[in-house]
Image (tube, rainbow, N blue to C red; front, side, top):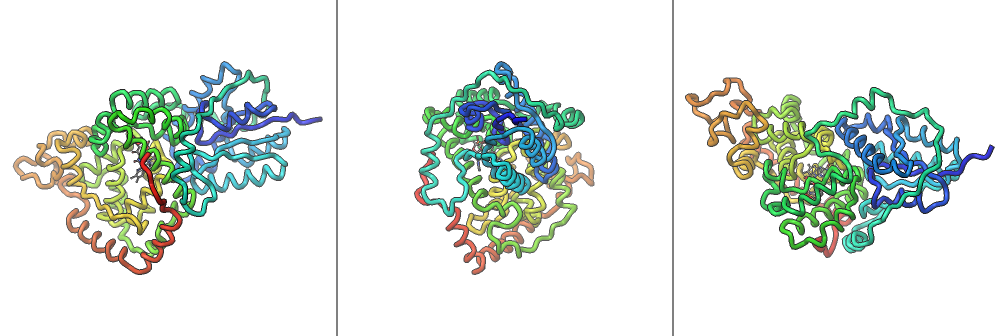
Length: 482
Ligand SMILES: Cc1cc2nc3c(=O)[nH]c(=O)nc-3n(C[C@H](O)[C@H](O)[C@H](O)COP(=O)(O)OP(=O)(O)OC[C@H]3O[C@@H](n4cnc5c(N)ncnc54)[C@H](O)[C@@H]3O)c2cc1C
């Protein structure tokens, strides 16, 4: 019997039905098509992927399906090994094309995509991967990258149209287990709500009023929750493309905050590009010489950091808030990494996974590039060691954010909120063994030791030689602001 000819739209981090080249390619071709999302059992189990990510994905798909319903289409959710699933489809149908976006992701997604490429060749199926968010595959250096970014960003947005579907897929052996769906179908109200409509509402409110204080509040743990765009999870899971965001905002550069925002949108592609060009930075130091750096790696301090129980109020408040909501601002992320790597003297590799799993907007390329920058292991970036007490005084002067997330500190007088251990005994209402009477390190001494260690290491000839390789691969000339 002749197998039915079909195409497959394989969605990954592109969970939207507008400006979607994968869906557009399917519509333009002459064959019926199936839209699939695979909860890959290997990837679900992988480091860095957590329940909150799966929840965001699941609800993004539900949102897509509510829009696709009128075309008798839906994203079919599949569960299992991607290779096994796609092999079954290639066996059962005459699959002409598998369309997907490139993914600059974790090791498991990289291995998966290589296997699918090989499998497609075996079946004589065309596996077409589209470039995502201006991140280029296979480039040897960054010459001309910035101007290409602008050119691509200014190209027209793909206007997806959908015909009425008549094709019915008969393969039903890869349905996700009920327990899995039950587990991810609840959605905590503290997380931003997935879906294109919510992404647009977020951008609109940012443009209309929230962006006014963007520059002023960017680093403030409390105020940034309103004044930052909060678009990151939508971009990370592809509810909206970078280009859609760029087009939405570029005509409003006069609004305060928007130019700075657009610059960061370009950083997004820049950091993912860095990772695409050197994916090894997810498991080894960007400057390889830093692999020789020795750390104390005190497991009890690592646990305290992970649990928001270090005794440093702003550090703990951020970790607790992140656990609950999935988002903290850039500077607070940088501070968490900085204290982990410098004052707590821990290898960045022992902390990166923890934060990846907590960030609702987890994006491998940005995460590892930034984590290493804030840990000082890139060799080429300025060392930024954040003192959590200074950050606290500067960005949460009245301790409002701290008190919101650490009930134990709610009655502490403002003048002691940043360093409760300095409270005179007469007014100290904390229990004697409270972590806020006994922070886990002496921040002044540990900071001094960390500075000596990192600066002497960074000055070595070996580090400087390795920096030359990094600069050649990643550094751009003639950078223009977005
Ligand atoms: C250790 C560490 C890990 C990080 N991990 C991630 C991550 O996994 N995913 C992620 O999206 N961002 C990450 N960031 C970058 C940044 O903190 C977030 O993008 C930002 O806080 C998201 O909030 P927003 O959307 O309101 O940002 P806005 O300030 O409104 O910026 C708009 C967009 O620009 C991009 N952007 C902003 N800052 C940066 C930056 N420094 N580098 C690259 N792109 C940027 C994001 O896509 C963001 O949504 C990390 C930063 C650090 C220090």
